[in-house]
View 1 (cartoon, rainbow, N blue to C red):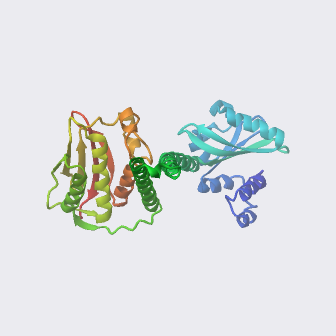
View 2 (view 1 turned 90 degrees about the vertical axis):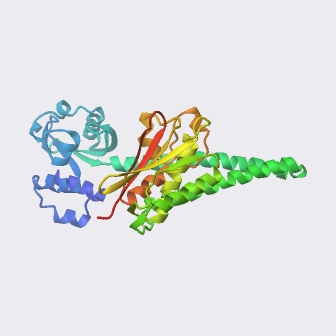
View 3 (view 1 turned 135 degrees about the horizontal axis):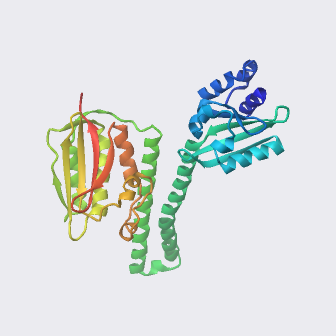
Length: 362
């Protein structure tokens, strides 16, 4: 049985073939210890499907105490998919399957079950693929969301271009209307691609930060002036002290502030209230910066998700807002790279406070 387990890992490239050759003299006691170091779970069952051996990884991942050796597996770990896998292995000698939603922790595993007809033992090998599946789901969601975001502007550009080609150019008023639609949606695509490239650069670790102690007052003022130039009726109360300094990258911090203020303008401004308040709080080794609006606010169950790529708050008003859906995700990544944290909370009596912290010089 030991040699079969070793061959399994050679096939799956968990252990190099040279290591297998050197390990053929391993005892049944030494193998679980080696698998523990590689993060791989191992359970060996006898002819009655009672646990004869379980290593620490399997014990922890499946919440089966080691003192349960001798107990039937079905009595201490009642997972129908695993039980069916064991039955299949006894018919086909060896079988493998991905098992999802295993408690505790709702984990996912690649499980290989091998039956040894000579000893009537069944060996179960568990490889935790929870993180791999999570990354795969993130990739799928990203592609699906990106396709959705691209579909509308591309369709508008195509439809209006076809109309112009088909004769709308002869009517100056209609041609102007179609041309404006093409320009507007081209700009939307441009912003989307720019944000995607920014986020990709940040998440890949290729974003070069120049962290240093910098004053932030002027950075806030520049962002505020830029926003107000496009929204002259907007009122922004700036309570940032002129002498406050933090460890940051000036370019990255400017992008963070721009995105947070623009987000507040987009979702937190209404006819009833066109005011945004910017505050700061000294927290000892850190400074907390707050951008407060008095809009509709964010439902409690969606607060953490607003920093996800392409996530949009689920209500009728926000679904109509334009944007790439990547701004807050970029904010979170940049603040984290600068050593800070970011979040949001309910404002009083209504609205949202987006906050982020940055370190002061030691």
